[in-house]
Image (cartoon, rainbow, N blue to C red; front, side, top):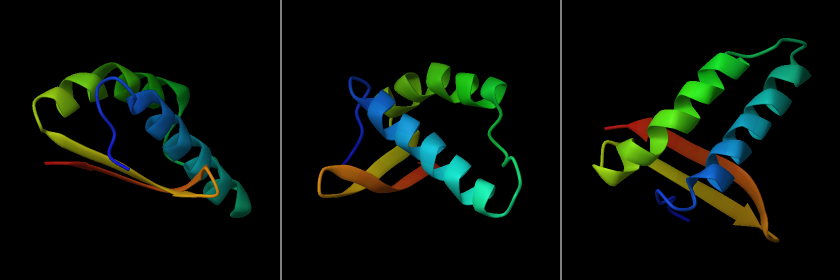
Length: 72
C-alpha cells in the first residue's frame, strides 16, 4: 500500500510503532526520538508530493505489519 500526502500519517505512525517495538525487544530506545519523528511528520508530505521519498506499508488482517521508508 503506497502512502500519499493525504494518508501518510497512518503509514508513518506504523513505522514509528514498529521501530519502537523492535528496539524495545533489544532493551534500547531506538533512533527515532520525538524530535526526529516530528521532523519526518513535517517533511514527508512535501517529499511525497515531489517524488523524493517512498513510503509503503504491508497489511495483514487490516494491521500494518511492515513499512518501507526511503529517500530517493
